[in-house]
Each structure stands twice: as structure tokens, then as C-alpha cells.
Image 1 (spheres, rainbow, N blue to C red):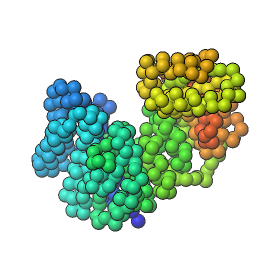
Image 2 (cartoon, protein in one colour; image 1 turned 180 degrees about the vertical axis):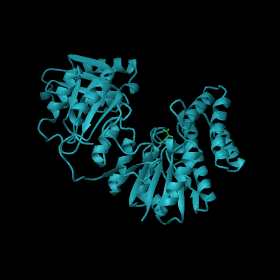
Image 3 (tube, rainbow, N blue to C red; image 1 turned 45 degrees about the vertical axis):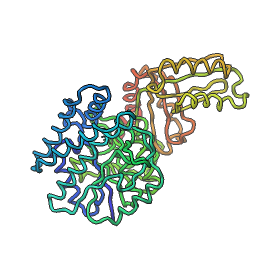
Image 4 (cartoon, rainbow, N blue to C red; image 1 turned 90 degrees about the vertical axis):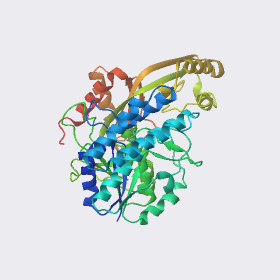
Length: 454
Ligand code: ASP
């Protein structure tokens, strides 16, 4: 039996947490592959090492002094090292590593940035391997490039190259405990490239799939996935079991517990994922698998995420015009954009995009192109949208779910700007004004969960 376990930044924020991580690893000999994030926040006012690294890299790119950012990062590692009674050389080598990265080629901005961003996970993995080793365990750090974790050269947003699976399969028979830094891999030409933020979850899932692990344990700072963001209200109902599809939809729509792209490798290889709490490792957590027995047609979770915009395109007889949709999407493609959703009617379609991707100039250009090239009679843009999603297997075919949700939103005074139930069988998505999102989520939670047993 082999388990891949991944520890998030909050589980590695200080020496005490790192000791707890090592206790968890040492407690189960099946935990043979350990994936780590960079040290995260120690409290709400703290900064994540990755954020400090980005600040440091940006200062260097702007030709400004990066010394204060660099010493803040080096000091984070030095303090952890001191509290863990590690040799001072550990902290020294972190600083040396950071200086070497900072001296690297700055002509390719994104590549330079990724090389710095990866330093948090890389140094943390070396440190955790040293602590495990110090406890007498047969543990070693493994560099993702040496292991053959090959990624596309989309800096800051990399995707897995499929040959990685064959390269990484050998890890199954590696002796002892392998400590593997999350979040980054190598391009085919040997450069360092990172996944999107929060991407250590993706690394863990890829390794679990590559070694055909019996489980992928994802350790974080909550006991389990909850039916709604637990920061919104106390006492939110925990979810003991989710399907991959439910978790994928809820992660996409804002459940930060697991990166939405981390589901895919595990699904493809059929690896069960378990979300667990580093501070309460014996709590059952949330299990994520292909199916679950207790499907009721009731939503299991309600998520929300902001930062969206819609472009509504209207033209009479759109339904009769062959190729309209293709040409609309071609314009989006030519603008270098990807769309998130596309609800449509007989004479209209809405394109939902991430607003950070579309600046004012691009927005103007797209509107003009829709009018001129597609003959749209109306083309209106709305920014500041949030997506609110209810998800649950079997829910869409259950009578009354959409009606209950719409009524709850209406009673809370939330206007539904967009509704998308179409293609996904397990979720209903509402576009609302960002300012209404939390109110909407609370109202939906009350409608579906209040009075039900937790
Ligand atoms: N350290 C990276 C971040 O803060 C990746 C991760 O934690 O998964 O986004």
C-alpha cells in the first residue's frame, strides 16, 4: 500500500506545525510520498512565503532593491530552522538559493518570476526531508525536474505533459519516504515553471496517479469540506463524502480546500482523495470518490467566487444563423481569451469571462467586433459579477431544487443576472452582483440546510 500525502502552507507555517506534519508522516508507513507547499500564514495578518517571493521577484524585475523582501523570506526559514534545532547551514543555504535565483536571467519576466515562486516549496521540501531524516527516518528530498515532472511552458499557469506519468511511476518503488516540493515542475528545455496559485494540490494528485496510490491524502487546516464557506457563519455542516464531479464544481466555484484542477489526475486514475486536518489527523475528514451511496437529489454544497463579467450579445434570428456561435467564440479566441460559461437563448448568448483577463481596450474591441462582424443589434457588458453555485449529484433531476433556490434568492432581495443549469447535470449556477454574493450564499444555505441534521 502506498499513500501520497500533501500538506498545505498553513500546515507548514512554523516549526510546531512542521513537527505535527512529521508526526503524521511517521505514524503511517504507507505515507511514502510527501508533497509540501511553501510555509503559509501563521495568523491572519501574516504573509505567505509565496507572496513574499513574488514581491521580491517583482522588486528585482523593476530594478528596485529586493533586500528587505529577501531577508523577510530568509528569516522565515531561519526561524523555522532555529525552532526545529536544525543546523544554521539550512537557513544559510536558503538565502544562497534565493540569491542564485535572483541573479538569474530577467529577460523572460514570467520565467524569472516562476523560478522565484518555486523557491518556497523547494526549500520547504528540503527542510521537511531534513527533519524527517533527523528523526531517523529514511527520507529524501526529490527535485521535480530530476523526477521528470514535465510541464507546458505556460509560466504561472502550467499544465502537465502526459509523458510525466511514465517518468514518475518509478517513485512507487523508491525506498523510504520521498519529500517532493509541490507547485512547480520543469519545461522540456529545463526551465522552472509553476502551476496556478494553490497548485501543490495538483502536484499531489499527479504523483498519486503516477504511482497508482491507494489514497491521496490532502492535509489542510479544516476538519472537512463544509457545505458553505465556514468563514461566513459558525457551525456550517461538514460534508463526509463527495464525488469527484461535485468537488470539481465546488472547487471551481470557490471552495478553496482543494484546487479545482487537482481533481483530474485522481479521477483518471481512480484514486480516492481524502481531505484531512493536520491538527486533527484522526478526524474522518472528507472522502472524494467516483460515486457515493447517499445521493438524495439535494445540494451538498454552496460555493461562490467573484471576478467575472458577462458580454450579452443579442440578434434576432440568431437561432437560424449557422455559425453564429462559432464566429462569436472565434472572436474570443482571437483576443487570446478563454470563456468560462456561455448560457444562450433563441436570440441571445452571454459569454462569461474572468474580468481580470479583459482590460477596457479589449472590451471595447470585442463589443465593436460583435456589432460589426456578427451584426449584433445589442452588445452589453456587465462587470462585477460573482458566480454562486449549488452542486450535488442527482440534484438537477430532483423536482423543485431550482425553484427553492430562486425563491430563496428572491426572498433575500438578490437579483439573478444569469442562470446556467444547462450542461452540467450536477450543478446550478447563478450569476449575481458581486456585492450580493455572500447574501445569496447564506440565503441558499438556509433554504437547503437549515433544519436538516448535520
Ligand atoms: N505556495 C503556492 C501558493 O501559495 C502553492 C500552494 O500553496 O499550493 O499558491
